[in-house]
Length: 74
Image (tube, helix red, strand yellow):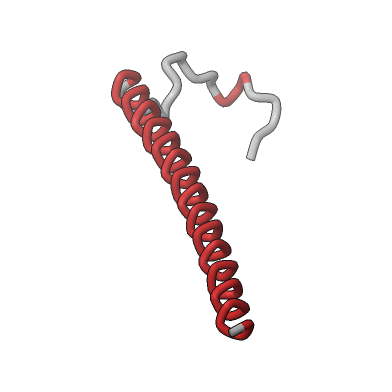
């Protein structure tokens, strides 16, 4: 009889352990989902800002100096 009670106790302890593990795993998943959502919103904000700014200008708007004004010649 004692053997059945001991087995039932061990099984109950195992079940409690598994429930705790699943709970922690769910918390980790929730945390990761929050982080992913934050990253997605940051990316969307950056894309919006880039669209608002318009194309990047490669060339200067200011007139270039002539070669004689540049101290070093190639």
